[in-house]
Amino acid sequence: MSYCRQEGKDRIIFATKEDHETPSSAELVADDPDDPYEEQGLILPNGDINWNCPCLGGMASGPCGEQFKSAFSCFHYSTEEIKGSDCVDQFRAMQECMQKYPDLYPQEDENEEKSSKDLEAASVEASAAKEEKGSS
Image (cartoon, rainbow, N blue to C red; front, side, top):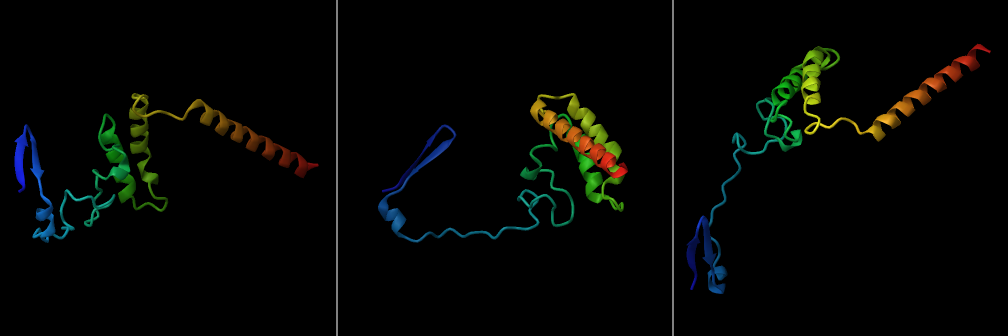
């Protein structure tokens, strides 16, 4: 015989083998594509940005959430030839905000920064060597 009991906020249901022998009578409800609480991905069916998408990694909330939303919206809706080229001010504001919170938004580590500077220096040296070779 199955029974149910409540323990605080939890409800515990004990079922017998006989309870599981009969087919379930539960009816599944089809997903509603217009359900605003359903995960839809980054872009909702109506073309709006889904700020709750886990793909944004929580960037839309937090101390720089408004700046992120402004910059991301500008880029998403940009119609410029070079997409987002009209959004420099919004991205700059977002970057300035993020620099105020280095614990939440860490910059490149020194190793990455050093390796990118090394690559830059090697590129400059290669260009200089190429120019010397071409002029002699």
